[in-house]
Image (cartoon, rainbow, N blue to C red; front, side):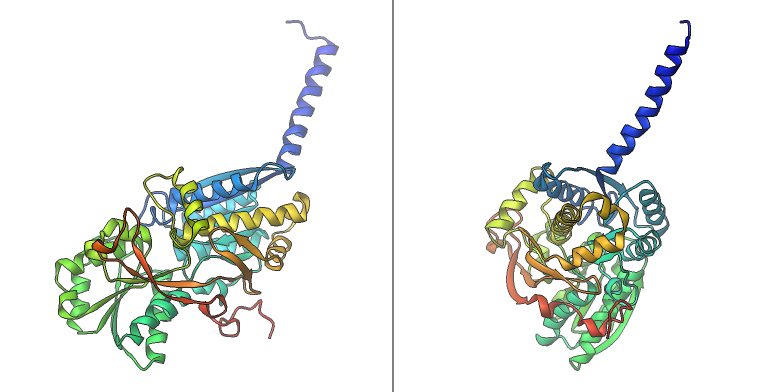
Length: 407
């Protein structure tokens, strides 16, 4: 084809318009990156159902607010280096919020990048209370639970029931260390004793028999499982196989999800106590929301992390709508401060507030796992023992050591 001046001008005009159109579209698009465990020990407790819950929030928020929303997903493989690299690339490529991030070592690493980049970060999946303590960041929120809440509720209940001597089986990374530390503090404060602990590789083992034998040999009243996901499930199953609970030793599953109970089975899990801030069968709203999510993930029911991803994404989007997209994109600090100032409310948790240190305040619930005869059907696993109000469930603001807190 012969090139003339007119065709060259037309081609130049088209080339100039295309980037401008893309730039305008990007400027009016909010991006949420769900960074999670899609293939490891926490897959069922986070993973695809965290993504599905975030997409449910986007669907519920709707399309009438004048901007478009994209949801990205990635597997951090429970490795801080992988999670950090993804987070850095996402923020550099225009992701406005990183969400979920189970595995406390990864969660803490992403927290540092969010600080550096002045970008919003809502951690739901990591348990370590250090995210609102010494490692707190001005652009980070911590949403559904933490190690202090778990220790106060589950650990505290075990001590009150007479479990005054403990031995911990602890996942050897930031989460396990924090969970053991916070529970040990509650045990000692109540006059109990910690007889010892053993650290287990993470990730790296599915055989906990030697660790369970070592724990039982110390003759504690309680073996505290400072682990989660598949590690907790394997410990519970193997403790039953070794007859440890028949010796009068109680197991404290310090972080147990409804998904873990499903994998363990009620016959083995019955009688365990655990703490969550969400249970699908709590009321009409939680049941209706669960059915909407289960249509997306028919083999997995949501837990407090999944509900937290929905809740956090919805509050984030409401805040963006209130601020306007340009202001929300301009500063993660301003965006998070606005999120702290706005009360949150949703079908999973009801109303909640966010403290200065980034801790979202909601009630916690102590549950006991039902016996098979008590269950009315699939996923009917919990009976409620006690509720801790939102203003009592988490570590007092003055005790956390967060540098954001003004004394």
